[in-house]
Image (cartoon, rainbow, N blue to C red; front, top):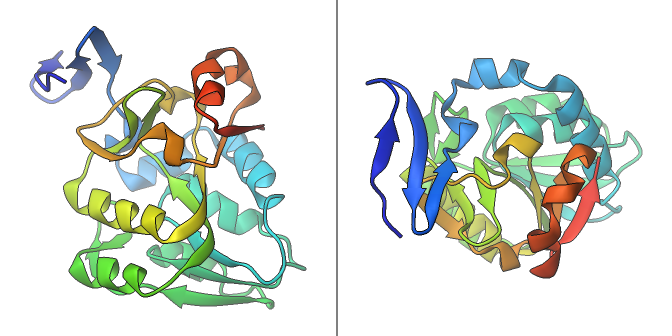
Length: 216
């Protein structure tokens, strides 16, 4: 896959050229504070649909990200579970949840992403086994797979996937069919993809790959 980049201006990355055509670039490059304000209705719907996938007694791995943060807000008050996360905002959001035990992974804080990354984070992940991972994604493409923009985050996400029985990717419709520079998993490693109902007509290839689709 060719990796040359097309730019509209010196500061704006528009497209990533791949074999056979150009793909939209992953939208996750925006600052965290700005991403918090994007698509609140869609994120709430995705989070609400994702929250129905959990059961009492599970160990849930919640990846860093603004959509996964919304998932944390939507966890049922009656849910009894252990949540492991590399996201300080998620840990704080769950601090008042009476029935959830919170485990925060160590590591170096990426201030732009509000995420803990690095060797300590990866090592901690290797010592655990989660029932389900809720994976935040920058981009997801049926042929290229799940991709991100940051190398350090890619190591953490790969370790998360390797140590979870189920992998639930949460993605707004604008991330479907886009790609970043670092591939973390082929699409077949996802057990579920939770996305917007408006994207239903674009999901045939994901369904064909064996991914269970949850439309919000």
